[in-house]
Image (cartoon, rainbow over all chains, first blue to last red; front, side, top):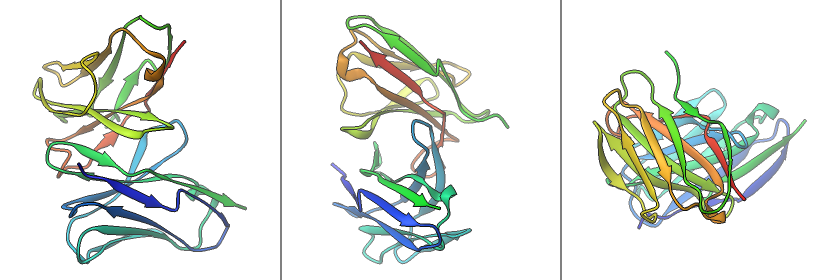
Length: 109
Length: 114
């Protein structure tokens, strides 16, 4: 089965600092999704990556899928309190959608 | 366009009871997926429905079932509730295929089993 490991498990940063979250797959990824979740709420779609080496940015968040398509990173530049939440990567194997273990981000003002 | 809605938002049940959760997808979306989120197991896929048919299924016991209606609304049923079924249940809709179309998530139903 597909497994997605995220690191770190939790992150506490000072406002204005940059940070990176990693998502590593046990198998080749054919589509990698990044979501953000506020505690106890639904998920908000951030980005989808499909091609090896692909990089996408939205506001201060950049995500990249490595060439071998087994790892993705999410980078936040100049973090803000509004970036706080749980970040989840997700992938579809064709018959099931898997989510990563999640990274909890706290941004201290 | 209205988002994905889930009802009820909160539910408290006792062991042995059964529960039905409802999900209304975004208008025009035909695929509805259900997920269970717990602190220990994270977010796990339950099943996906498309055009009233269960297209994919995760590794959950038969106590967990679902269905989809002709208007794409979906219900999820859990019978003989166990304490471990306490979780946030999330529903997501996509246009046709969650593998290629973005999934939009509802706010979730928080189920507590006492």
